[in-house]
Image (tube, rainbow, N blue to C red):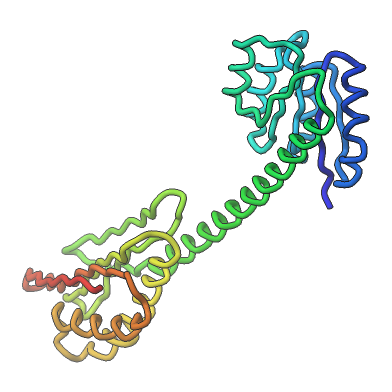
Length: 280
């Protein structure tokens, strides 16, 4: 198990000793190491090395060199995963307000009640653990979404035809932070002069929509285009087949809308016919 730390910051050595003594049994039970600093500057030096593994900071308010409220703001900005408890014997309203704005978890007056101190620290610790687990889960989900987006981009990347008459371009732009989505696009060569242009949108964003675009990519050319290359493919005929095919494929799925556009471009006759439909 990785090391975990709680950092105590106070310019009075007796206070640091008393806090360490109060927390000795509590930290041993949870395999947490106590770190101490006589002022905020030293505390920030410690956090440069131990910050990622530090869950809690208990800080005095009035200290030399840097006030506790300013210190806790730096901690919040630099180490947002760390929860802070303010411990002070002074009632400086402005400084306490600054500390609250810095996002302190709790505020404890000196001299403290031992039972209340341990209860607040334990509450902060459990909250910090939940926050850490949440952050890890969010990171994992983001990594999975990014992977899904890369796979979708590779899957949908069409082989664009080369033509002296028409220039084809596509751009893949998923929703930021989701990395993948419901956009579908393709350009399929039917003959040297005829091209099937496809643009679709699966309602919603994320993996569900991206999965449906993968189904579309997997069935359109192998099941329909290749089987009908010798015939006269039309946008309406293609979309009628796609409607039946997707209704069967997604027969157990509810709340899903697919908008699809199909066009036939004939560069020799300069004719472009198209059809659009909504499935749902």
